[in-house]
Image (tube, rainbow, N blue to C red; front, side, top):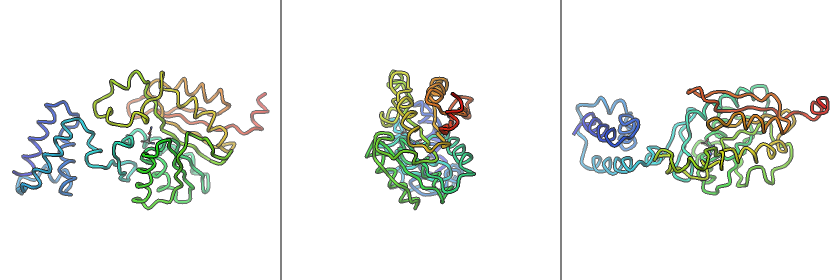
Amino acid sequence: MTPCTLLRETAACFRQAGIPDAETDSALLLSSLCGRPPLELRLDTDSELDEKLLSAFHALTKRRLSREPLQYITGEAPFFGLVFRVDPRVLIPRPETELLCEWALECLEEVPSPRILDLCCGSGCIGLSLSARRPDAAVTLSDLSADALAVAAENADRLALKVHLRQGDLAEGLPDASFDMVVSNPPYIPSSQCPHLQPEVLREPRLALDGGTDGCDLYRRIVPDVRRILRPGGYLLMELGWEESDIVAGLLKGHSFSSVTVRDDFNGIHRMIYAVCTPPEELCSRN
Ligand code: GLN
């Protein structure tokens, strides 16, 4: 059987099973096995695939048909021009989160050797992407989950990026005013919605998704915590869940953050928020 025929048949089968991106996923699965580019495989009507490869491919398609996410099967996810190792211990990096990284880099343009904290780092995709683009930065990756941190450590190693890793509950134990920027993509799905997520998302760690009753529990804890560990004038950038921007903007203003700004994602959803840790002198002049 040729790659072209195999991929056509597999895509049809995926489509019938209701798998989104059937063509792309089937080509990426085959590509992960034989190391050839997905598009080349889709166009290859000549070469014959051997039995060993076919049976290995069949095993992978079975996993995908059970709605295991593609990235857990191949073990990797592209993000911000890098490739990250992922497995069920961490959330799969999303394209929206790349926008948060871009915004973070914009904010840091004028800051020499910035000290950056990626809070709830998961795979480490945010902090490691920033470290790759700003070699002068001192980046800390932090997560509550030791499992997630192990994946982040592996990613740091593979990408040859020197970062500091710490396990802990948000900012607990971190020194006052020790960062120029805190960036975070915390869990933000309302608990009641968690059981109804797409089958693939249900394979991701609940700890990385569940944001409590209204999805905003983590923001309620992060905002006051981060105020303490940011230097005056430092930046907080966070990803947001659907329709959470008003609540989070209110929290930030309530904790004396200034310049609160929201940006949309590719779908026009208020997806991320920025705020500056107001310096004490400005706080005084406001009163
Ligand atoms: N920071 C990681 C990401 O953006 C993990 C986020 C999380 O676990 N909530 O993918």
